[in-house]
Length: 279
Image (tube, rainbow, N blue to C red; front, side):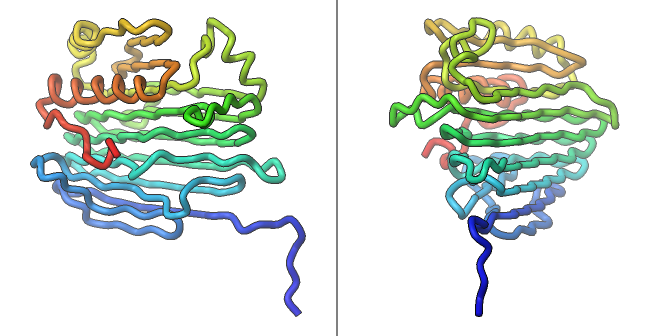
């Protein structure tokens, strides 16, 4: 006779490993629910892989681990096919996502995010770590939307620990952790925290020319919309751009504008986002 443990549900443990070398995908391994596929929009752009979560979202107790390696003298980009949904917790379990990027010398890499939509009563512990060698540059980002805004959801009970770590030549260059631990409305009403905004993004630009790039970005980027806020700073050669917004669509447009200005105006790459990113 089959026996089932009461209240114990199956959880996903997805792993994905992808290697770029000489501007090609040379190794790709994954297990459910994670997948990755080459993406070519015909723009003669850098080699790109599209990440897919075939389960349709992340639930409490799930663990995902993505490892991306970019060899020396290689340009590559990775982005998810759709927004990631973090569903309400069950039995108070936390979902865990760990993303690691190993970037070789004289290389360029883009970790281009879609939104992470965090439902009320969801719990997520996520980390993004970049380990870079010398003479290399990277453009990374994360986007977070608090609640199903289109449905009018205003979440209050959310746990989010979102850590980003930038290392270069085995030395820590920059690290930051966003922590939201329940009672979200208190953080939302705080002028020093969310200031009544419901979505935010982070862009990290690891650059070999931080002073000139920071000056250029300050001259290129403007924010005139009321109740939306942008900041640009530089720490140890890492440029950090943050925005908090009241409308996820406006945030998405500004994010894309900044991303394309960095890759096109500052680095001479194609002034386009992947077509799938806009869907």
